[in-house]
Amino acid sequence: MNERTKSRLLYALKSRGPQTSAELAKGLGVTTVAIRQHLDGLSEDGLVAFEDIKGSVGRPKRVWSLSDKGNSQFPDNHSNLMVEMLDGVREIYGDSGIEKLIQRRENTARAQYSQALDGVEGLPDRLNVLADQRSREGYMAEVAPLGDGSYLLIENHCSICAAAAKCQEFCRSELDIFREMLGPECSVVREEHIVSGARRCTYRVRTIRGSGEAG
Image (cartoon, rainbow, N blue to C red; front, side, top):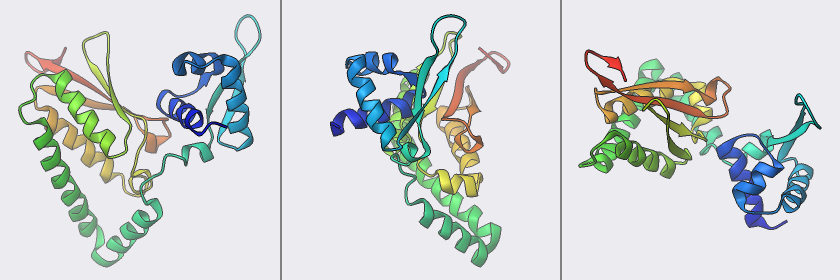
């Protein structure tokens, strides 16, 4: 199998979720026949799985998604080492040690994001800069405008998932940082959470108007 096409297919399923072969073909600009051949190869390798979903009419639609093995192609940065270190910090220094570790990471992120956002005006631009910073860290982040004037900050991958599952204070810390970086005039609410079983993490961001009601 062409490695570039394989990587693009896996990325498409990771970033956009389950799709039919026709949807994948359209998104990648490849024929449906070729996509099906590639999907069959990925299925043999255990990287993708499918589900036949029956609609109201016609034949069932075959929807493809990443398997656990396929998801592992997008690594959790040194996950085993991170979990082991967290256990060690908690054993030696207790919960206060974990809190100090998270605070240090938070301070580093605050300095980095503040520098990147310096001089950037307007919520859409600030969100795009923040998403770019997160993507550099492996979160595969993007911004999607919504019809009600709000925005969705999407992270298709969690590069510290094992550590976050072990200690969800990491997730709390990241949410706090987003709120701080986007300012008090914005509401930031997490709607999907990988650690809770979702495919991705999403944050709905909207400008707060007037007396505090979200617009």
